[in-house]
Structures are given as structure tokens and as C-alpha cells.
Length: 409
Image 1: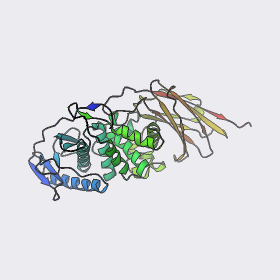
Image 2: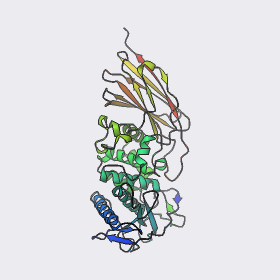
Image 3: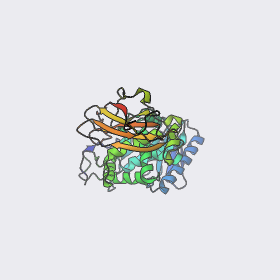
Image 4: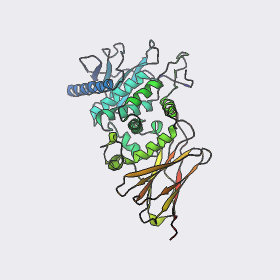
């Protein structure tokens, strides 16, 4: 039995009014169109929902459970109706007859978004996840749905959450992620590439690990532990690693998405578009060394900042010395990556964080082929995040740089 706090169960919401209904021949999904939604849009949405559910089922995800005919049939219901968030899940209430906590759920999808296919996938995924683990934070559902839709389509779409998350790398992951958590799909996509080569198995099993039964009764709400952060920490710790160090490495890896993908992006995250490359917070040339950078942008828990140091012209047998100085109250992680003239990574080093002191130091040997050094600084907070709670540990840092040479002549 996992201990932990309770959280209120998601509140039931009345189903939207519909003027048109189309059901798949297999009966596992139906799409309802609000008044004024053309039949052609309803038919297209049904095709997208069927294809996405088949994709999930082939990947080992359980299909939608029965909702007792609340939408006119036993399958999952998707309502094409105006919604500001383009795609979201809602519930009819708790299923009281299952052993593990479960909810009846349906999806609401905007009828005329910029990408109906992606939004239907996001809505379907969120509804399935709400049914699967109703105690999990909404931000985790939205992040996971974004990652699943990406695996299906090969693009982050249905809103600009992923683009905004990359444009502001100091944002925290999941609870603080853009678009109410959807921007966290990038973290899960990077994690999936690292853990299972993008097959989706790791994310699926993570959700299964986080499911639970509110064993003392549901009068006080649903038991919220384990949540996805706890499950992820447990799995990472089983491999004799720290979750915080893994997140810092993924923050360094995200630098190579978008316009920098040719230099080091994971194979499963190619073709995301130019705007998916995070910005460089500071750029320092060799002639300017030594240098104290200005304060970084505010970094949320598990957020990061990136900087580039050009080291062309450094004397032979030189070392770039990198000091990180951060604000108190959180743990800091420093990751440095040597790059060649094309921008391709040559090697990476990490400084072991010291929880008692908000600082880190790394010397970087400047080999002949090294022309630039990428510096990634990550705020690792001081505790495991909770996607249901606001984390006030937003902090800034700065970097100090110089070059020394061991050569005597």
C-alpha cells in the first residue's frame, strides 16, 4: 500500500449537447457533433479516433472500458464542441465496481481546430488516462496525451504547448509546463527515446505502476499516491540512478531539437520544425574570457538554461573552467557538452550536485576538435515535484568562465 495524501475526485460534468452521432462498426468509439458541426467533420473525427485507438491497442494500451451506454453506446465518446483548450477529458463520475480506482470518461474536442487529427488523438488519450487513473494530476494526463499523439503523428500539434515549452526552457516540467501541462510531452518523448527507443512501452508501464486503489474508502477523495513523479523516481532509482540527474541530462538533450537536430537529436525526435530549438541565454567568445554572465532567467523546478562558449583560439593544452553559482534553497546541476565546428557533441561531463551549497564546478579539457562548449544549468529543486501542487522554488543562477593552459612555452 502506497501512503500519501488524498485529492478530490474530478467533478462530473454534463455531457455536451449533440445533434449528430457516428459510431465505429466495432462499437469501441463514437463521435458526437454539436449543432452546426458538419457531418463531414464528424466522419473525419471518427476515422481519426478509430486509427489512434488501433495504434494505442497495438502498443499494449488497454482499450476504452464501458461507460454504461451514457453516450448511446458502450464505447468511448468524443464530443466535437467548442472548448478553449482544443482537447480535454471530462467525467460522468466514479466507477464503483472496479477494484482499482476508475472513472467513466469522455473527450471534448474543438470542432474546427488547426489540426483535427492531433486534437482528436489528444482528447481520446486524455479520456483514456482519466479513466485509467482518475487520481493522477491533469497536467500529467495532458503531457502524456501530447507524447502519445506525437508518437502517432510524428509532430507536436493541437496547440502550441510544445513550442512554448522549448521557447521558455526555464519553465518547470509538467505542473508548470505550457498549455496546462501539454508542453511536458517533450520530456516524456525524450524519456521514451532514452528508455525504450521510442516504442512507448516505458510510458505505458509507468502509468500502470502509478495506478492504485483507495483502500480505505473514497469518502475523503482518491488516494493520490503513487503519482507519476513517484513512479518515475522509483523506476529510476531501481537502476541505481537519480531522477534529478536524468532530468538534467534530458534538459541538455533538448538543446539539439528543432533547428539543431542534425547535430545530436534522438532519432525519434527529428523533423519537429525550426521553432523547437530552445534559445541560448548567453554566448561568450574566447576573447571575452574571463567572464561572469548575468543572472539567468527564472528557472522553475527541473527547468534549465543554456549558454554557449566559443573556445576557438584557446592556447594548446587548455582547460575551460566553469563555475555555477545559484540561489539558495534548491539543488543545482551543471552539465557541459563539448561541440565541434559543426555543432555536433563530442563528449559530456556533469558536476555532482552538493545539496548543502548552491554551486558547482567543472574543468573542460579543450581538445583540438573542440570549438564550442554548451553549458546547461538545471534547477533540481529540493524535493520531488507534485503535479497537483504549486512549487515556489523558482530560482536563478549565473556562470563564471575562464581558460587556463598547462603548456609552459
